[in-house]
Image 1: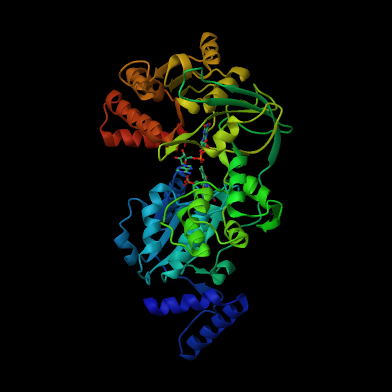
Image 2: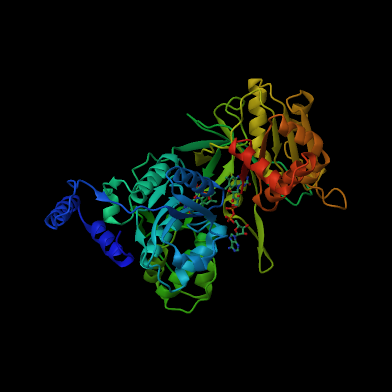
Amino acid sequence: MLGESKFKIFLDLINTAGKDELIWMSGYLNGVVYNQGMQTAPVKNIAAPAVNKITIVYGTETGNSKRLATDFAYKAKQKQIHAKVIGMDQYRLSDLQKEEYLLAVISTHGEGEPPIAARKFYDHIHQNGFKLDKLKYSVLALGDTSYPLYCKTGEDIDEQFNKLGGVRIAPLQKCDVEYDDDANGWFNAVLEQLSSKPVDLPKEAAVADIKVPAKKVGKQVYTGTIVTKINLNDRGSSKETWHIEIAADGLEYQCGDSIGIVPENPDEVVDAIIQAAGVDAEKVVSFKNETFTIYNLLRNKINIIHLTERLVKQYAEISGQDIPATRMNLLDLLKIYPVKDAAQFEEIVLKMNAISPRLYTIASSPSAHEGEVHIVAVKDQYTVNGEKKFGLCSDYISQFKVDGEQKFFVQPNKRFRLPAEDKNIIMVGPGTGIAAFRSFIAERDATGATGKNWLFFGEQRFATDFLYQTEIQNWYETGVLTKVNLAFSRDQQEKIYVQHRMLKHAAELYQWMNEGAYFFVCGKKDPMSIDVEKTLLRIIEQQGNKTSEEAVKYLEHLEEQGRYEKDVY
Ligand SMILES: Cc1cc2nc3c(=O)[nH]c(=O)nc-3n(C[C@H](O)[C@H](O)[C@H](O)COP(=O)(O)OP(=O)(O)OC[C@H]3O[C@@H](n4cnc5c(N)ncnc54)[C@H](O)[C@@H]3O)c2cc1C
Ligand SMILES: Cc1cc2nc3c(=O)[nH]c(=O)nc-3n(C[C@H](O)[C@H](O)[C@H](O)COP(=O)(O)O)c2cc1C
């Protein structure tokens, strides 16, 4: 084996060589060995180092990266490579400089940002000036081509490891929503590099740069017509939850999928920006290989709200002003830190990000609502300095006009699927989480599925917020819904949520689970899905006479069997 520094030089040489050069080098080395009087077989391939210990770190928001990292560790074990799997939030950052073989599986979220649990790791490698001389690494980046900053976090980590002195053992692999094939291909390539078998270095590894993903067929974008728009909350509610029905030709989806919508920026904000910047709204500019008038660019293409710190920093650099590192709206920036002229404004906006799509879980069923897709979207409200504001896309949806057109795409969710028609299901879907279960129940009703269906639904008040009350009551009366438990948090002094209803029916719930039921959760991730999971664990522990570790194992087992699934956000 070569020492550390020699091995780095050796890999650097290989990584920059073309195929012909590699063949020549291999022949040359063989000749050198032969001339030194040693027996050697003719060299066809390059021997990779034998490695028996690796670390796989993952950064995840919705669990895909964790699942892959765990699968990879299992595969590595079968090749006698011990793999330590650890979430980036649990990883001891001081260990990084000691790492020799590190694989990172990381998704991108928000607007090209790391998952929350990976932020500390991401910031650490970007901010702290240290060297990773020992590191041999490769990055698997999960993402979605519908987002403007595709696999950005994976790209950043790959590049930064390299800047800090790490050596790639396999090139960055970016993966779209259907990630299984690319991810497994990447891991097999990594395993080959780690194994002691002679291997041909893949050409991409020699380039030691970002691999351009194979051209994927883009998502099909439907142009739908809004056929129904109803506010599901009654007068007096603190919420505005819109039921939207969209008809579209050739529509294909399955229960459990979502749709993606790219919102437009509000007209009045776009006008105010144009005025503040003193630009010609009709001037034609080019943005990411497309041409737009400045007006259309600001209205339909560029995200102008809640700019990331990186973009605010960029604004500060271009405009030559001192601006604190914080997130801001473009209009506020222009008002507080005006640009010099229209040319400076153009330079700034042409470097900004495109608007990200927002996902909405489908609330209809292909069998019950042919040719239509329904969603249920709550108008997002927040306050900034005491001023009430609305989320961009949910506000945009709230202004949909019946008969108006809207573009959307279908985002599949392969894990969140109805099981075989005779299986029992338990559904926990408070608030907009009801979407997935309106879809599930309508499908089971339309197809005459024989499995039992138990729904937990919750909202603030029975009188104003019981979303889909009539449908749920009808399904209960006709027996499609076997059981319904409701929790209206603000109808009494103490707050009652779905998890309290689960506890009340703990024995029966555990019996259903033990008899093979599937457990689904849809809606707000935090705190709802976290509280529901804690409660589920408590029920398993108490009803099953298990220790907390055994309860965790039980739930993990359900997850492996696809019997505990979440669609949470
Ligand atoms: C798989 C999936 C399924 C989903 N299904 C549904 C569903 O069925 N129904 C549903 O209603 N939603 C659903 N969502 C959520 C939905 O995609 C959107 O995230 C939600 O509608 C909010 O988007 P928005 O554009 O209205 O808000 P945004 O404009 O994106 O704002 C979101 C939050 O960002 C912060 N923010 C934004 N701008 C500023 C600012 N200028 N200053 C300070 N803070 C700011 C605020 O906290 C605000 O609440 C789902 C999400 C996912 C990932
Ligand atoms: C709200 C949201 C924002 C996302 N933003 C991006 C993005 O900016 N770029 C990208 O490539 N993928 C983006 N994705 C797609 C995820 O990276 C992709 O779904 C991935 O498989 C998730 O992996 P995880 O479960 O390990 O977090 C986004 C997904 C969601 C739900």
